[in-house]
Length: 97
Image (tube, rainbow, N blue to C red; front, side):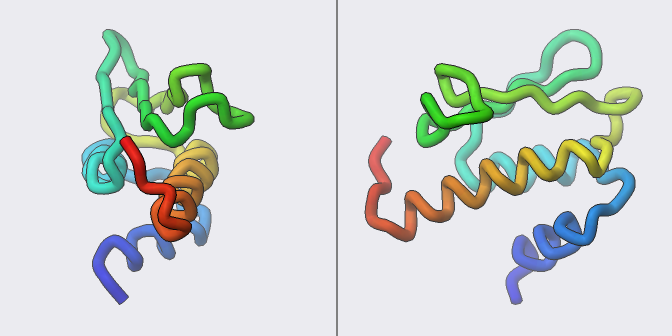
């Protein structure tokens, strides 16, 4: 199993917190645009999430951080859903940017 696969498996086990840097590294690895807002939020975007239920019109969603250093496990569910959509679209040959 790849390193990314192991990390995603760990996330699926519902940890209480994950480092923000690990989350950002994985998101960027899947082609997400990651923007840090003033305060403790990360704005995440991907064109394949546009107009998808649960995501914004531009394919965005917000990930709050705790003290700017960690992401609570609760928010990993949304991230895992987004990654699953991206992987599904890519595997189906719908990979268009």
